Length: 237
Length: 343
Image (cartoon, rainbow over all chains, first blue to last red; front, side, top):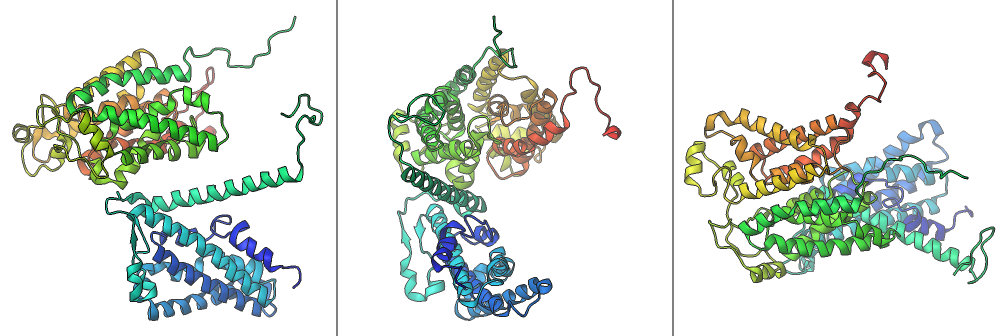
């Protein structure tokens, strides 16, 4: 379909319509497992996989599934993808699978996935759908990993602990600690910390967008000093 | 001639925000003097450092929110928040503890919700609880009071401020801690065995509480707040303690006098729960608000795991304040109260 440009899709998924920061979808796993980088990365990869696969399958069957039964069909497709990634993680990253626990099967109910299936993949051809799923998953995953990194850094004073769960034994040495004296801010790795840090991330994004908008407005209509406002007395300094 | 078109309200309170805040600051002075006398200059250092940090955070937050900084910095409100928080912090706290607390109070407790007058929770208690949850060890270490341990000097206080970890001082369990860890001793025996219990409630603590009571009564006299919330708190706490005292068995929760003059009771009753923004609005509502805080303080002190209960009790009741307001709304003058079945 020519109306969808990959550039727009990328911009939407990563920034403008970011699932975690703008749509605020899938907050349950986002807040629950983002206490460390390795947990975040595990869930991010799993979500990315499910989102891409489900978008692919939904897009393939979009013309044969009638509107009335589309949601159950989508959920079955998503559940199948989730089962697959669950079995894969059991086989290759068993300890991480145990840590993520209930939040792996819960990916099925993650609103981002059903949302993208219904809003995009059900209306678009295969290639853009796969790309949309991938880029949305990436946008979600990047926020998840950023959140995990901030919380791990504040809460434990280190980064990349337990990376061997995901990357094998040589990753054990990646663990990096600021200083042994660092007072650990326990709140950051407790549930309230997830809400607070997410709030700050969203506020930061909004602030950035607002400044960009103002810059664009200023660039579009340069104001000459000394000119008069429309129907307003006084001069612009 | 033309009339001046001024809309209501036509009657104004004589006091500005800055005036009220200054009065509150002055009223904390007896309590601060008592704390300094019994525990050394740690609290003073806390207050000075905390105040400077609070002004800096306030200015930064106002700049981010495109507000003019001067009127807000001049109304002393942020200094009241920081002073109340720093009184509650253990003396000889390291700088990062104070900074985290002030950040939590000013940014998370106040500006996130829209600044002065919009905060649903008491900002000082938000900062205190965040610190208590994050750094339980540092937050529950108290200097031993004068008469039971050596009092550090000003240089020690500054060293403690700069140190990365907790300052190594003579510390001692507070009377409330001793009471909680009591294993099968009768109250009378416990008080005879442990030196922490002074004349009535605890060495140092009783005088600190009496000093805050004096400051609070002065504020009452100056009509900064009404008597309802503090009296509700003290009555409910005393009643709970009287019921739980059972003439001093080993399971006793401590006498009313001990609870009134221990920990942060008077400080909380007169300086924390009287915050006009986060408490209930009507007089009847404030009485209920204070009483429920008193009940919670007793329950958390006797059955909980934390050194004192005022901060948690205040935050929980801040949640409940709108509900209390809804059920205690006074009837409009001249109207009769609406009955339930007429609604």
